Image 1 (cartoon, rainbow, N blue to C red):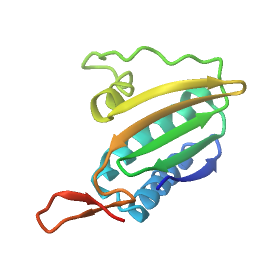
Image 2 (image 1 turned 180 degrees about the vertical axis):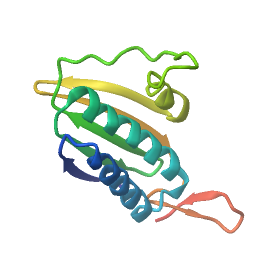
Image 3 (image 1 turned 90 degrees about the vertical axis):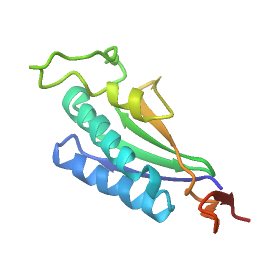
Image 4 (image 1 turned 135 degrees about the horizontal axis):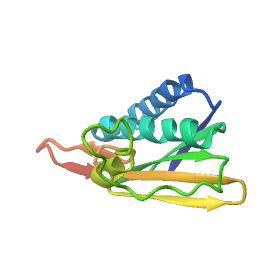
Length: 143
C-alpha cells in the first residue's frame, strides 16, 4: 500500500506548528506511531529551515508504504544550497539542524527542480499501513 498526502503553508513561523500537526495526524492515521516522534521533530526542523532560510511558502508531503514513512518539505528557493551538516560549538544557537536527519532517519536527502527544492527524510516503521502486531509482539504483514 502506498499513500500520499500533502499540505501547503505560508512562509510564516506559525506554519511550522501546523506542519507538525499535519505530519502527526497523517502518521497516526496510518498507524505509524513508532516513527511519530522522530518524524515530528525532523519536520519541525525542515519546515523552520524553509521559513527561515528559503523565505517562501512551503509544502509538506507525507508518503507511507509497508515499511517506511517519508516526509518531504518543498520550498521555492532552488538556488539556495544546503550547508554541509556540521557540529556547532557549545555557544551557537544554530547550525545543528541537519545533523538530526543524519542521526535519526534511515535515509535523507535533497532534490532540486526548476523552481523548488525538496528536503526529505525516510523513517523505517513496522506499524505503517499493511503491518500489524502479531500476538508474539513481532510485526507481520496484513493481507
